[in-house]
Structures are given as C-alpha cells and as structure tokens.
Amino acid sequence: MQTRRRHHQEWRIFFLIILANGALCDVPCGKSNITLSISTQTSETLTSPYYPNNYPANARCIWYITVDEGSTIAFRFSVFNTERKWDTLTIGNSHESSDGDSVIGLFSSSLTSLAVISNNHTAWMEFTSDSSVTKIGFEVKITQESYEGE
Ligand SMILES: [Ca+2]
Image 1 (tube, protein in one colour):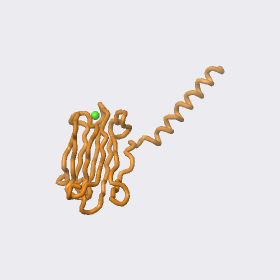
Image 2 (cartoon, helix red, strand yellow):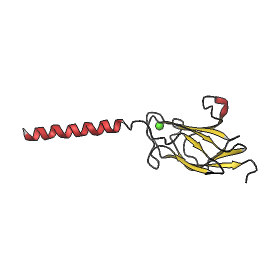
Image 3 (cartoon, protein in one colour):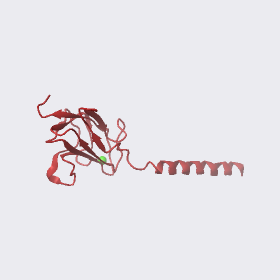
Image 4 (spheres, protein in one colour):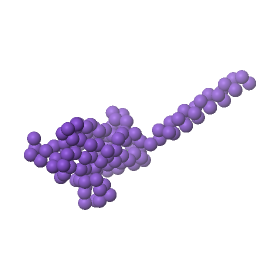
C-alpha cells in the first residue's frame, strides 16, 4: 500500500514537470527585433532555436532587422544545415515578410559560405521547420554595412 502511494506521488511530480514545460512550449526564437547602429552595436549573432543542438520540429521564428539609414545588412553564416526542402530559412528586404517580392533568397540543406546582403537598411529573416527530421540549423552574424563597403 505504501509503495503504491509513493508511486502515485511520483506520477504527480511527473505531471507537474510536464505542466512546467508546457509554459515553455513556444519555440525559443530569442528577440524578434534586432536594431544595429554605428552608435551602439554594429553586429549581432543569431541562431536557430536550441543551437548547437538540433532545432525542434514545427518551429517558426521571424526576425526583423533594422540598421542606420543609408546602410545595408549582411548575413554571414558560419553554420547552415537544415533538412533539404522542408526546413527553410528565408531572407528578405524591408519588414514586409508577407510580401513575396521582398524575398532575397530561400535556403535549405547543407550550405557552406552562405552570405546574403540586403538592398537597404531593413530586412527580415524567417525560419520554419516541418513536423519531422531536424538538424543543427544555423548560426549567422548579422552586420551593419555601409554602402561604400567600409
Ligand atoms: Ca524537418
């Protein structure tokens, strides 16, 4: 009888842990608005959720980047590996991620030396994964660049 009661308690603890994790159910994308400026910081490193562990299934993260007017935004990836076709990273100009015309590029699979530069001082980046197969994802350094290429 006592063993049975203890068993019951263990189950309760187990469910409490599940509830606690439930609060963290949203994918940890980090902050979604990145602002860079010559007067504060000119670069920021972003990664896929849980990097350097695999990103989760059914993830969706979107980041909006703003730098000083007159500058552009460079995305330089030190690591890029997603499930080909099904888990993708899209980068676009401006902050209108719903506008297909703003897309600069859509990437997936294992890529080396991936680098992208925006047309102007605002850009967006969106990562999505489907319901199965996950990989390490990506690490990208985002830098404010001047038009003069300084
Ligand atoms: Ca996948």
